[in-house]
Amino acid sequence: MADLFLDKVLVKNNKDKDELDTEREMVLRLQNRVMMLFFGSGECERCKEFVPKLKDFFKRLTDEFYVERAAQLVLLYISLDSSEKKQLKFLKDMPKGCLFIPFKDSYRMELKSKFNVEEIPTVVVLRPDGSVLSPNAVPEICNRGPDCFQNWKEGAELIDRNFMMAEEFDDTKMRSMTDPLRRLKYKVDKKKKKTESREEDDDEEDGGGGGGGGGREVSELAMAPALCGFSVTAACSTFPFYEPFD
Image (cartoon, rainbow, N blue to C red; front, side):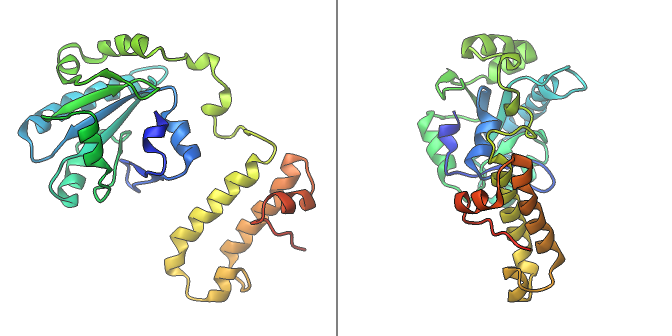
């Protein structure tokens, strides 16, 4: 199912609007899960009436207050709103744990066409392989509530998480010996994106100045080889972005 969204950006419906913008993040979030594609709009009265039911449905299956272990379920809002402002306003009523596609991404309309969505609200339920489990689960959600997830789970043939690698669910585990370096590279790149607009000195950007933040990032990268058990020289030859320092 992650293949549907490779090279795309999905956004978390939280305060910071964090993005899933790497293949690794996308796979970890979407693989071996049932996905609900909610096509709707804040300008649609039926959608506004349905959202409280959808929110309660999702919350009772994923919130630790209700369940010991969150269901293997992902909710993605596909906005059919007429403007980004209206989309963001409608998202305030949506579950905080859901994802959405940015308004400027025309892929929203491609998905609408792909799944033959002719009315809203519509909830298309997908198996982990991306095939359709239910073309519109709105009536089922309204009539049966969280109980219908058991049927979805059986129909999707989900692999119980107890039998999957712990690494998928614990991001502190290493996929390989070089995994800490890859993780830190992503971390450094994201920090740079957030701080570029505030940097005033080109020397600080290149690490030539006295910028404290950059020093910390370099220090973290320098420590990674020791954690992995290989030499700095090996790290340099494997990862061009890694530069040893005194």
